[in-house]
Length: 214
Length: 296
Image (cartoon, rainbow over all chains, first blue to last red; front, side):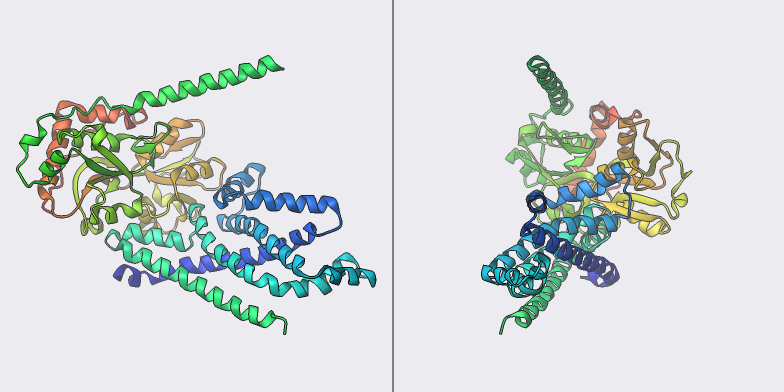
């Protein structure tokens, strides 16, 4: 246990990065995913096609491959930023596909009469979506979003293999420096991930209660 | 269009089969000669006797380390570590079929030994004091040193680790070289991946300025692309590779050291090296002497 207690600062540094990766990618994925969902239900066929293609292509690709394409593919076309930013981009791209499907299922859960009624009183497509459909859909989007973001929290660990010093990399560093305490270090890292995931779950269940229709 | 396509398929198949046969040709080890009378030589109750009687040994090695332990298309790990393991097994009267290779990554070498999941670990395993607290080391069987790989022409003028200040320096997460940079040269901006191939690619397209790890690994990359990379060529650490065994098996440790010394004597050690890492590293090393002793 000493190896863990003596190196708490390394763990804290690692988990801080894990957390910031998660939050940035979650924000990015929420925006991109909602746009994609809007495109998938939009009346413009090319937008629908693009969004469908995006979701199918990204959702069915392993995250490691997405990371590879971003971290080693983008530099081939001249885009070179820090590995941390690459990680945020890769996680956002990947998670957005799942968010898009969660949002779309929420939209589909709203009775179609709602959209028809708002169109018939002269609202535009985007007004319908923003003012009528999405607010009602939200309660049904929150539960799947919780699962997606908890998965995202754990998915950030892939970034360890792509040049980002996050929790898993912190764990690896400690393991190498403290060969006598490997199990304690891994257990501590697992526990910290678990606590963060439970915290996220708790926040989402509060949010779920708050948005539940009365 | 039919003919050209067929031709190119045929050509691809031919190339592939050449590649496969080239790889396959290396996999068999001619170096290790199985000792048929092994069983009788060992004292009853000794670890060697147990292993020899069982006719089986489980060896932890790397599956992703070029030149030392790399599992490729043949499905069997290949490299210097693997040959060393075969030499020791042969001395116990165990042939290749009796050896089970298990992948040990850096993080599970100690646990596997402590839990006796493997009988020994030959996995570019640097001997150090913290590790020695929980496992025992025979050897060393090889002495590497940490060096620096830079882009051809050395654009940043790196002559040694002290020149890495502010430079993006790539290594593998949880490795000894990374830890050395961390503690001794903290001014370097360390970027860590999970394997050195990614470091090499990142250096190739300019995302990092240098790659650092044991010279033997870096030599492999220079060999693959001499027009892209060069080695600084001044090792600044000593990394004695040992053979990890569970604690409290001094006799087994002595036996391994004796086997290594014999292999050096009769040329098996040199052959093991030349058939693997020696394809890239031209100077065949001698077994580091003296062994560090098993009673530590």
